[in-house]
Amino acid sequence: MKKKIFSACFAAAVSFAPSLSAAPIEIKFSHVVADDTPKGQMALKFKELAEERLPGKVEVKVYPNSQLFTDNKVLEAMLLGDVQMAAPSLSKFESYTPRLQIYDLPFLFRDMEAVERFQQGPVGQGMLTSMADKGLFGLGYLHNGLKQLSASEPLRVPSDAAGKKFRIQASDVLHAQFEAIDAVALKKPFSEVFTLLQTRAIDGQENTWSNIYSQNFYEVQPYITESNHGVIDYMVVTSTDFWDGLDDEVRLELKKSLDEALVYGNNLAEKIAERDKQNIIDSKRSKVIELSEEERQQWVDAMKPVWNSFADDIGHDALEAAELANSNQ
Ligand code: LMR
Image (cartoon, rainbow, N blue to C red; front, side):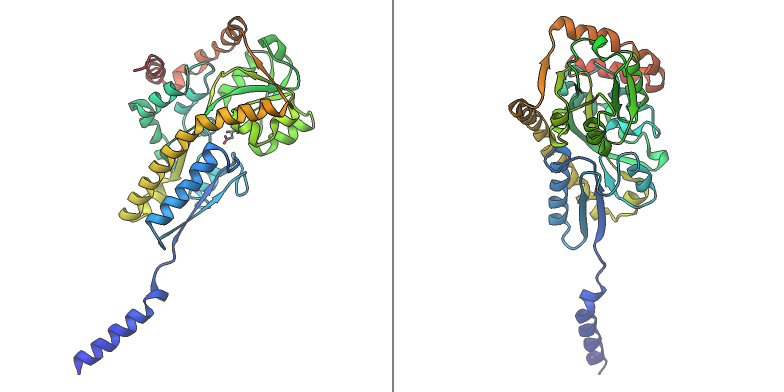
């Protein structure tokens, strides 16, 4: 009899199992760029891998193009639990740590290989956890690429930019960089840049080839100077509360999925940059200006003194590590 009752209970429990199973963990991934960019593609790959590895356990919702949060709001939203993952550019963490300001120093990294070496080295890896006390946890880096200057007038030498208004990301280093060439820098969210350019409220902006192309900046900026004067890369972040609250298996599989998605996105970054530069050239909407060695040196000489004002806050160890990364070490 006892056995019968037990079996009946067991059967009932099994038949109720689906309705008792926990709802999937919702992971909102908010970003500000288009899907067809390194970040857009990486986020979609992460969704695919995470949902494949953790079927029914997680649901990743990717919100591109500032649909959910603009870049100056997303980190606050993350700390409030309204979004679980994001990959802001490294320029957007200034109020959480001065360490990441290093990425905005003009003409610091020789090329993207040097950036990669720096990020994978001990100092770069240490920066991932540099905001843990503020509740933000870095899960990895993603490349976009080197920055170019776009404008309504041709910019060949720094004096061409004097008096002109440029949109910048919310970064004091970038502000100082434009001040150093006597230009006016305005901190504005990425989502507002196209309209600011189109209405001529500003004269120019700095960004990567993929952002200039995918946001149609090239359609309203007749000149792009190939200056390669800085970098836009990303840190994928989550909140320590969310991350620590996951069970071990989920956390591990999410991290594995993200690591793979980052490799995928990083492999795409250079190809997308080349493709979008060519797309812009082919469009004939914007003229790409190549600088002579001598012209480029003028930008270096004008902007590089900015380093001195930020070196102490960033930390000299980080600057030394960047130098090593430039020399292939
Ligand atoms: C910008 O604000 O210009 C970029 O950081 C946007 C992005 O995420 O690439």
